[in-house]
Length: 219
Image (tube, rainbow, N blue to C red; front, side):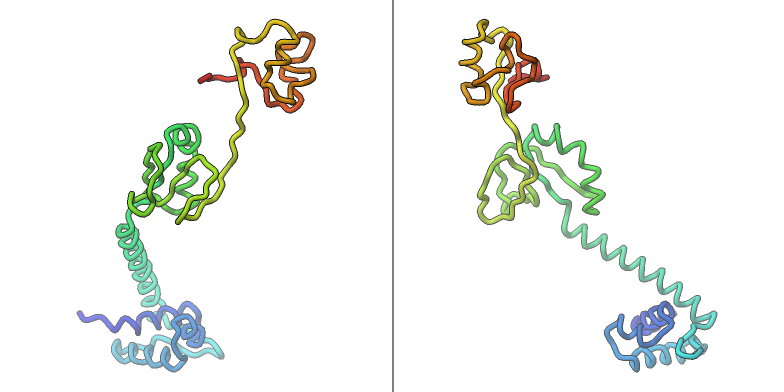
């Protein structure tokens, strides 16, 4: 069986949803007369009345409402199929990052990233070299550095705080020696400071010096 023209079906669906030819015309970017003509053409082809005027509203008949519901469902199926085809053509989003950042930070956030971006197909490429986003097939690269990165758009995600540590066995035994060797910076020029007898642990005024026992891994 031959189907009616697609334009007549979309006009029917929009008019039934809005209960108005004018609002349907605005949505379809056509005139009021064009919507009315498409629906009359569909009624003539089917041999049945699809709309009845009630005041300022165009109410679909039982047949018109049922057909409009079927068209709505068919359009949703078409949109889903087109979106799937478009995503397949684009391929997955490829994200490149270093091994340490991937395992210690990114891996716990992948589910959230996929949910918030609406991209279920995500490929993480773990590599420490700097990727060329124009030739390596990489869409997003996460790297440590201050830039600038020519030819790409960069956004700072977070900052990293670094501080010196040493083995407790290597810590100077006397307070005066400890004070001179503790980072050789002004933050430890005056007590209280770690390693100085009489001072409290972790009491460095700028909190940048910590004994090695504070780290779970010392490299």
